[in-house]
Length: 215
Length: 215
Image (cartoon, rainbow over all chains, first blue to last red; front, side, top):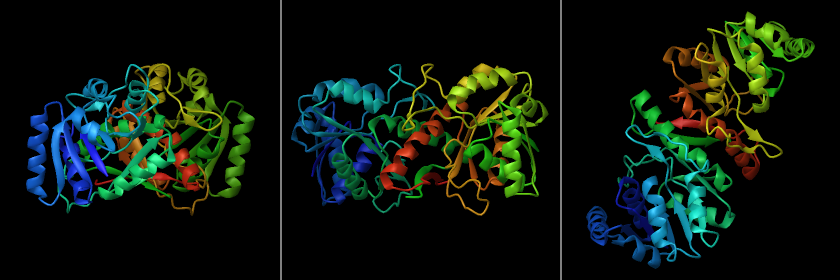
């Protein structure tokens, strides 16, 4: 699969990118500036020389890809989506975005009362299939391919078929994906980001995660 | 400890009540009608005859207890708190409430934009210490003392000391309690209720839960 990671230059985008490349996917690191995308892609290739990884700007990346992954901070969500709206038409867009508030990454309730994922669906319109996933994973050791992540990924979205595709992408990145129902449930994994950061601070750890039990 | 479970006649209230009684606590099942509280208490005593369990109305229960546990549906939260405000003054109030929408227990965003737990704190004022816990546990087999529940309880609140008390109550009921930060984080365990119901339906199970990993 050809996967564009929009805003893919941060720890989560690069960590997922290298893992997907190691699983045999073509990975395109997108950035606002093509040069930054190229630079990060070549850094990832140093870590994993066998990977099919390249970098470019978000618009070209989105246009070339089968699947677009949105990995920008919340404040970059609307500006980024507005530039790639045409390029992602008819495609699956996986949003990793969680709204957090600096400096302590506190939970942040959006004025819309929606999850960031539902806002993304509204911003893109019905022609684009939005699925929320990967919010609640720690980015800390993600780039280390040998690091085993003790965390499930909650997958929220409308279509079973799309969630199955994302579930396979979870497995490719070393996670168990769990079908967690409708897109509106995305407020839970989005909120978990701040909650798990609080748990990290309270318990003096770096990688608090969650597992779904009983399934 | 003398624990009043306000609106304690449902599956969650009775399940926690019998578990706390088995751990040696005095349990008072509160209801709007004293007769209903008494009836449910005597049913619990049939299940666990050694327990110190009685039933009465919410106001008397709250007045007698060291700790009040609010186990009403969300629609009963404000009416119940307004009747017991005086009785819980200076005490610890543990809220189990999660706002869900019938008939499918869908996630429900409150018009206030807050968690139900934060609304409870606002409704009660500063003199009462509100801690949120036990939202995300399955009530299904809770009354069965031999049933091992594979689920952590997320504990959200302001004071470390109060959260420590609730953590002990978690252990007494057979759960590991996890300090999950400030009261505003309660929107996550509240939202988890609907998400876990969705997971139950999707995976055809009855007891989906969560575990916090990495701590």
